[in-house]
Amino acid sequence: MKAFLSELRGAVLGTLVLALVTCGLYPLAVWAIAQAAFPDQANGSLIVDTDGTVRGSRLIGQGFTGAGYFHPRPSAAGAYGYDAANSGGSNLGPTSQKLHDALRDRVAAYRIENGLNEADRVPADAVTASGSGLDPHISPRNAALQASRVARHRGMSVEQVTALIQQHTTQPGFGVLGEPGVHVLELNLALDGKGRRMNDER
Image (tube, rainbow, N blue to C red; front, side, top):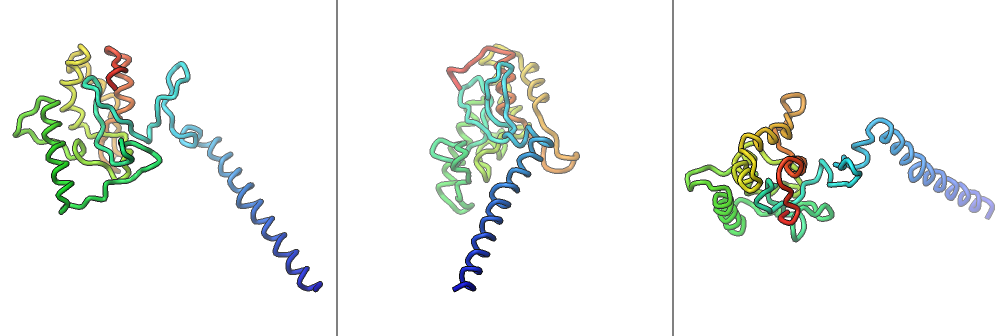
């Protein structure tokens, strides 16, 4: 019995020590290091107004449908898209008729809303969802094709809108990793600061 109690006491003590280290001390140390070295990233890379209002995150896209806003790429995350709790793609493959029909409809809608001709090529990111469904960026080409529509609905010149696109275009990491991208949320917030606010259309 003494041997059993000794083994039991050792097992319980070991469990408590490991629980304290792995569930308490280690997470606390990681949190403290992150807060000290990378506070912005550790707290969600939030986009905050000058009045302290949180508008979103640089890491997660948001849906915009108003004609006076740049539209993000489609999202399959959740029933209405851009649901961070349901991140994921559509899982539809290249032989899927459902995907084929959706792409056809999206291409047609994109051309109509942006005043394009049938022969004009539509960027892939304008009609396909990302793997996460939360991509906050669109391609510079996609943004450029939307510029005329946005400028017209905001009473701005295309040159003004194009300048904002360039200001909110991120370059590849170290100049070679990835592709240039336009951050949709930051660009639309900048538009609200430059042109007519269209919060009722968002």
